[in-house]
Image (cartoon, rainbow, N blue to C red; front, side, top):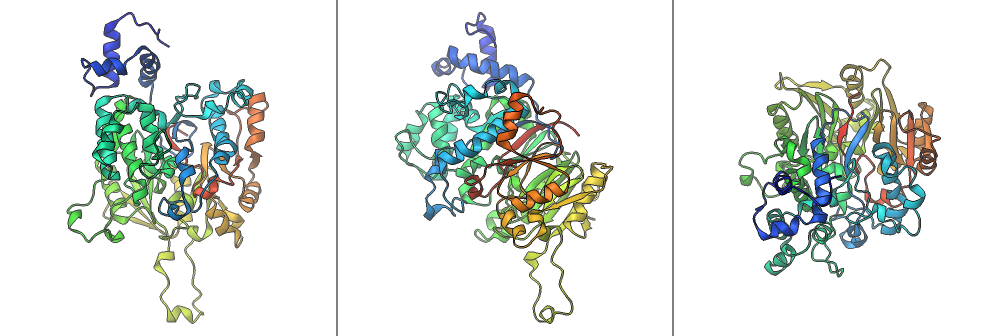
Length: 525
């Protein structure tokens, strides 16, 4: 780290200009922003920026950096009458979701992505005296990992810039319908406190001034890294508009992403959209990150679902082809149902030749021709799943796959050059009613830390049996963390393992660890 007492005014000025190009460096406020303590922290950050890289070209390459958001006080303010409006199925117990569940996620990520922050220090970090400060964004003792990157801290750092702060306060107040007086008060609020208000909707005195954004813990949905580009979402639900706005400002204004601002992709509305009828879903242009998967260096999957529309997929395809980001996009149309919500709630990748999926998505329902009902009633089109592949070279002649399993096999064998047969692990071990029950609690929503090593919820017992039958080891995260701390297990050599994470409260929020991660750097495979 650079010395706290800088000997060169030129060095400081250059740092300011590099980190905050929109700031007036001659204004009095700039000296408030760039105090010694601020410069000490952020000069270190600027040095990190020189080595900062954005690149993800598969779902399973060794994870190196990701964006996360730790459960904030807004989750503890979700009320039953608003839960579904805020996209929750139930209210959660905040203390349990933090201490008993999400903290283990952070610990595990640290051992794999930033071990120097935790190895040999676990007892101290988890001591009663430490009071969980290691896990609290914006706290002086927060881990501040440059690999496990906390969105709230990025927001706080960005808000130190007065110009950006004024613009973002105005934008938030506009979409939330705040009074002008509140807007002025927020503009004058210190950056760290303001970041917490933007996320929780609550002032320091515990007064709520607008709704929380509890879904920000699902960072995958705000964007997807596609090679060295980031495709931003266009949310389907009003509850996610503010988090989308905050992330857009972070990607375009935080110095960490300065070198990639030209690689941030935004979905436009379709031409003349304002002439189309109201808010009818058939005419909407929406896309969320849970419906986008980067499965190989030149191949992206986009799901059409409850949250991503055909128009959204169409605009994303044109954008990705026009910007020469990928050569191939496959659209997977899944049933438009709350049960499924996003593509990554019905399947995710485990290894180059292994996938976990809900069977009814893998194969569309087959109808018995001898049943009279098939002559009396048309089959439900919404229950069908289709996969249509477009290529940049020949977009007018898409390829149709017989079913989703055929698509996954094609990715494994042809895109990823697997030398082994493709394996499919089914939710609930393909046993009724456990298949649907466990899909609801995210049996198919797994995060690969490296190829073959995935995180999932501990409550999906039948799916765990299916993993064991497929040759995977299964380990409880609490045991694994102790083994990683003691050196009994090496993060670099562990393979073919399903890591079970505590999930009693997290699963109520309707998202697994694939949802709770936005990878921005993975190794090639």
